[in-house]
Image (cartoon, rainbow, N blue to C red; front, side):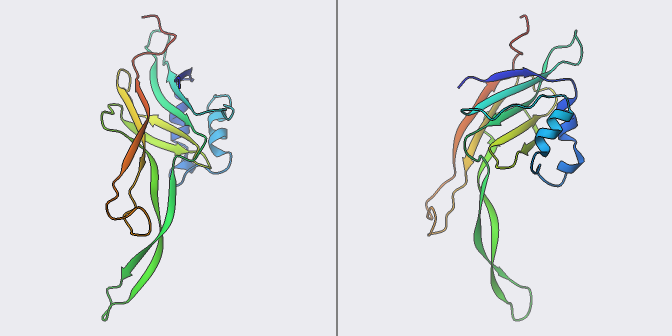
Amino acid sequence: MLTEHRHVPAGAIQVIAANPAFASRQPQGAELDLAMINAGLEPMPVPQSPRIVVLWEQASAAALPQPVAVLIDASEPMLRSRLLPREEISQDNPPTRRWKMLDEIWLNLVADSGNGASISSTLWAPGKQRALVVLAPNARNQRLKLSLQKKAQTAAYLDGAAATDSAFVIVDEILGHAPWEEI
């Protein structure tokens, strides 16, 4: 799969990432698309196949383009969780035992070993098939390595006690320069 590159207006990604609605929760409904449109980005259609788009901004004509985010589209959710039972024991005397169903992430998009680009935040579109990975400043010339990590579910009725975490690299890019730069 080829990585796409796209120019974005200076400060647009920071406006999206700083949206007060996203401070305590992930975007709902069309909020991420609307935030992108309000920041000056035209809507990107749902792709026919998985897609990776590096978003670059340029503060001025004399400045070098800087990578500010990566948009990842997939055909399946990249963030998945499931309800699992966990026993809770109260601090009462005598203690009370009860089972509670807790939501646990078992598939997630994470920075892989060898990643050099710092990630500020990840915004998930509803359905978790689109992720906007916001990069920290100075990501230029850094290696961005992201993987889908499957957390082992060691319960006997799931993966079993011998299960271990596994990861599949989906992004491995050197953010050296925007393709339209003359080098």
